[in-house]
Amino acid sequence: MHISMCDIIIVTLLSEEIAKPERNNKCKRKRQSHCSCDLKFRDCLRKTNSLVSAQIGLTYFNVLGPQCFRKAHPIVRCLRRTRITGQKCEEYELDYTKPKMWQWFDSETF
Image 1 (spheres, rainbow, N blue to C red):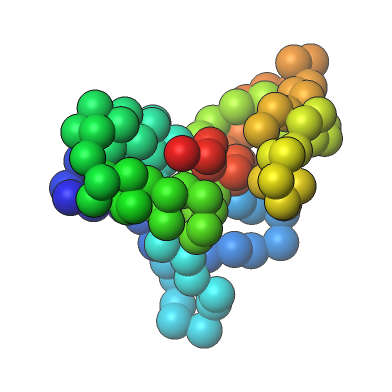
Image 2 (image 1 turned 90 degrees about the vertical axis):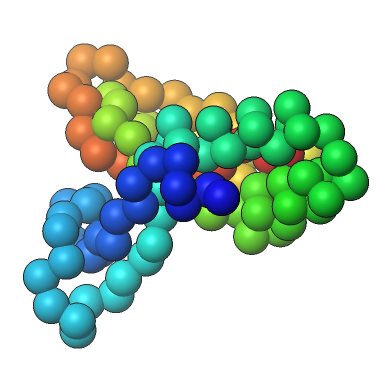
């Protein structure tokens, strides 16, 4: 269901570069989605408003807590973390003096 909403990419995590097409199978690979896709998926689950959609949303966004990627001004630091675990960043400070670049962001909680 989630995968059909948007394209999912396989990226390699290489030194300074956040996302590149896969070059070889020796690199560490992650399967991630664009942040706009995660937003659509979360909204879809909330609008469905069922026990099953709530369980899926809680498991995917709160327990698994994947990161999503998007192009934004460089992240300086995390300004606010989740109250319960403190592991996910809910608000970022961005450096608007520098150009946008592809980066990883913590997904919002469900």
